[in-house]
Amino acid sequence: MKFFNLWIVALPILLVGCVENTSGPQGTSVATIYPAETILTMNTDSPVTQAVAVVDEKIIALGSVVEITEQLTSFQLSIDDSFEDKVIMPGFVENHLHPSLAGILLPSVFITPWDWDLPHQKVSGVQGRIAYLDRLKEKVAQHDPNDGFFITWGYSQYFHGQVGRADLDEINSKIPIIVWQRSFHEIIANTAALQQLDMKADDYAQHPMINFARGHFWETGLFAIMNKMRPIIQEPSRLKYGLQQGLDHARQNGITAVADQGVPMIDLDSEMALLESVIKATELPMHMFLVGNAKGMAPDGDEVAAVGAIAALPERNTDTLTFLPKQVKLLADGAFYSQLMQMQDGYLDGHHGEWLTPPEDLLRIARRYWLEDFQIHIHVNGDWGVRVVLTIIETLNNEYPRPNHRTVLHHFGYSAPDQIKRLADLGVWVSANPFYLWALAEKYAEIGLGPERAHAMVRLGALERHGVPISLHSDLPMAPAAPLKLASVAASRQSAQGNVLMPSEKLSPIAALRGITIDAAKMIQQEDSIGSIEIGKSADFVVLEANPLEIDPVFWPDIPIWGTVFKGQIRPRD
Image (cartoon, rainbow, N blue to C red; front, top):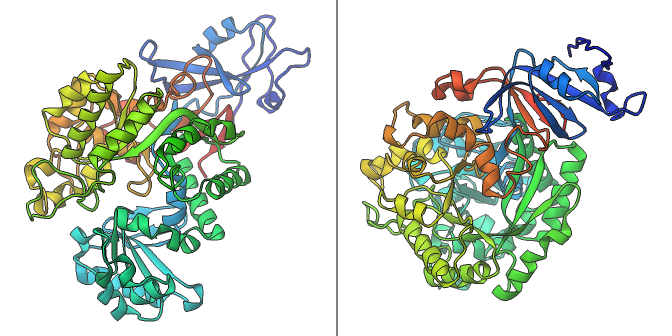
């Protein structure tokens, strides 16, 4: 770490090593000034500055070093030039990441269509049915039978062909195998796994989203067996390992704030206790915000009790976990990675999407929260799903007008062109996953959607032109928790194959960067405390080796991340 002394008349300068104490020798508070090559504040009134001053956990001044020293005459000043040749941005805000989902899936063996780079495993992608089954055989052969279940994640029928229970039995009939589809919303199990879980065909014969003969459970069919799977997938040491890896992956990519969009996944008490223990044990430099899951908080179907239970969640806040007041997560249609989103014009092969919550039920549940002035976050993927959700918001706003309702559509895989203006007129916002475009657009152009719809997925340029607030999220592991990658895809619309798809739907570079900072914070009502570098806000920064606004967005993922500053504390990446 490099330091230099700047002497101003009658103004003592302290070494950075003294900043641990917030008061100087005469009781004067200590302020640390960080000059940088460039500071991108994400504040439209003052978008660029040269230095930032921090006291304790807060930003207290911005400007040049000279301007700041002239302002802070009552402070002992310390100049830390560690970042003088670097670019500072607000710490990245990930407003849709489920730590418990990472805890469940990241300990799995990844066999995926595309490469993955995680703290604990580097994965080379594989495509094609034969190649997938060969990789699966190889990994199962390496599995110690004494370790119980073999669980793999990343399978996609669109890249790997159809795989069923019989294929898994042929690979190994003794080791229980669970193949988790790329979406998380479906699994395939072999006979040994079904037996170990004490599952019988007669128990599930009537469920429309279970094909027991194939060992296939999807959407609500998977939810129906989660309690049986819970002892396996939420075994504490396994879940703890996944949580650590997922959150460290986010930290390494410059994230300083996460919102878990929908707790609990299965069990609130155990999930929150483990999450808090991991954050404390690792001294994770990250705000952790939590949004109540309407379905998860009503396990017995008591929707009225769930409203009260979610309203009371902030009473459980701790130093490390913050339940966001009066915010709730609802679910509309099925998974984008499974092509189970609801599409107005259907699918080319004739299959149909699914509703996680049928429209009439979604209206009833949404009304309960709307009338209690909750901000509603809604998982929605297809244009039929978007149409249903917009109609619900319009209906509720006519019944009980709320000009600043801040309803957010999450994921936003495909929307019809005529829905954008309606969305803007209704005051609805969007938190999108642009990774869908990168990973799926060209494959879905071949299978299911056709080029016209597939190339238009994650339609963001039109949203920007209509003034709709937009943020970007990963929903790890639906995408890497790598905000610069997400922003790159949103601003370039370049697919995994290197093709630019429907360039009219690009976000502007500045909108893409706002989507991982201030606008991401706005979606969860945290714009007054994080998301931009402004006086009074938390001193949360990501430190980059280059300025994204001076580089083609295609190359943003290549920008090295030096590390972060969280509440004024420096944390190098490695």
